[in-house]
Length: 287
Image (cartoon, rainbow, N blue to C red; front, side, top):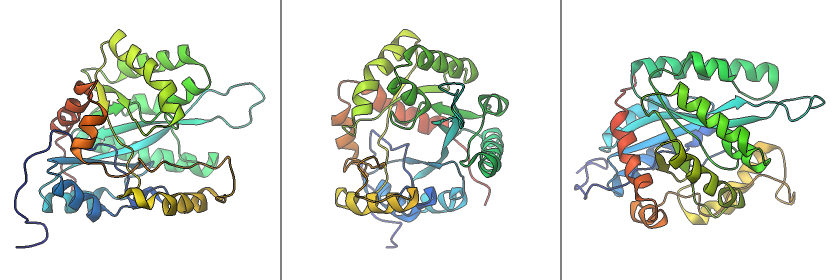
């Protein structure tokens, strides 16, 4: 029996949609193969990989996951240029959304978005696109609001700009019609998540938007947290002694389906919608 042809396991009732691979360039540890093996071990019928501002791993993801009996969902966490906080601010901030490819048109559009983001990075310092570029290339894509700390919506909430955050969600809703926008919930125990979740739940129910539960996977096991944060510091050009450095918690590991179901037991629809998104994404990467 080959490594990828192990005995079948019961199909999980949750799939991860926000895994990051080593293609996220010093922002995640797992190889594509490690992600595929773990998803298969847990009985996940699909796995979403959404590396930050690039599609470098798309071919490997498309080749590797099916060999383990796992449907690949290709996505990317994309940086959107935000409004400046004041006229004196020299460089506008950016905030993430997550985009998933539904079909061939979505593949073409996300490829264009990634290319434009990279080109803008040469000029602006970091990869990013404007909302106008997103609007031009939104067809064939499913969107989620990303995480509370680095997401566009989450950053506005942290700045106490809840009205602007809600308006941005409504702009996304208009753009991603036919129920292609999901309000994303993450629970790693971070302050930003605790602050944001009541607003996200309120807006989801107020505007009839579906919820989706994700875990922002950056490493495979809890024990890898410290080593990962050291690597992250290298990528960010800082040291572990810097109290203001960006870091992730031990909860950013590849959780089991049962752990995720238990974590979101109060919002079961957010768990169920991971399978809905997996079913809605049916694109096969051209190899």
